Image (cartoon, rainbow, N blue to C red; front, side):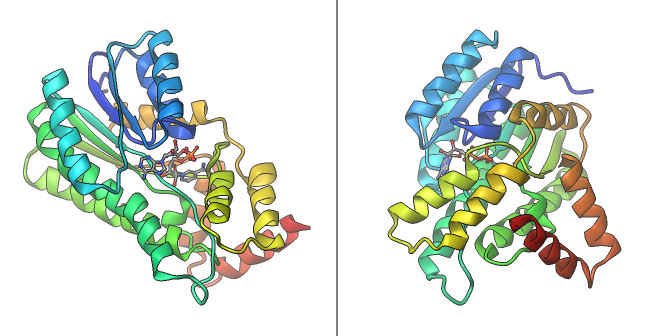
Length: 281
Ligand SMILES: NC(=O)c1ccc[n+]([C@@H]2O[C@H](COP(=O)([O-])OP(=O)(O)OC[C@H]3O[C@@H](n4cnc5c(N)ncnc54)[C@H](O)[C@@H]3O)[C@@H](O)[C@H]2O)c1
């Protein structure tokens, strides 16, 4: 059991959803927090709640995880502010929907920049500090789309499969090289956050044509698929860190999909497509 109390924990994408809930869960356990997000208002709201939740010191900084130099400078700032960094939760991420046929390369670059490069930037920038702490942990947030591919989600699925590969490689390197660093890849199922609405709003703002199907998909996710309270998701993730689990499924939906993908490697996509069609009715 790894105690979180007193540890310096870094959470990216802390302004909303799972990141905010992680910050509050860690604060309640007495962690010292370095919180960041591109959304300053959301970030400050989380920091205020974390302060009330009884955590130790809270450091905040507006940060875009896709900015490599920004992340490198941020890691140095956090390390010098607290003198040590124990845990990094690479959580920031966005969803996006479009077919492969119709997607522009820029759509891939944007999603890869945040969901994949953001995780690599956060890991590489903080890893020397996490190793130096002598009792560290790297937590990278993938998704059930880290093992299930779905139509119109090639950008997201590609990054989330890659986050799994990157994180599992890191774990094996830390083990082999004798570093006292736990590594956990997180595969959430549907968590009740702003992720689906944020994706549609961003697509609208960038001038992408929004079809009735896109709006129907947002409703399907918000009303039927994104079910778990983020606070419950955060508890599951933090407990997985405390017990040094290599991978954690968050929710029964993630556990079921993981099982079916492994049991039915050739047939699961047909089954899931049929299930989605039924749910849309
Ligand atoms: N909600 C779910 O059902 C679900 C399922 C599987 C995986 N996830 C993953 O969980 C993570 C958190 O998502 P969420 O559901 O809490 O979504 P959310 O939209 O509620 O929160 C994401 C946060 O990331 C921030 N963010 C976006 N781009 C950023 C950038 N470039 N730099 C820094 N911060 C940025 C947003 O401002 C927001 O505060 C993501 O990696 C997501 O892919 C979510």
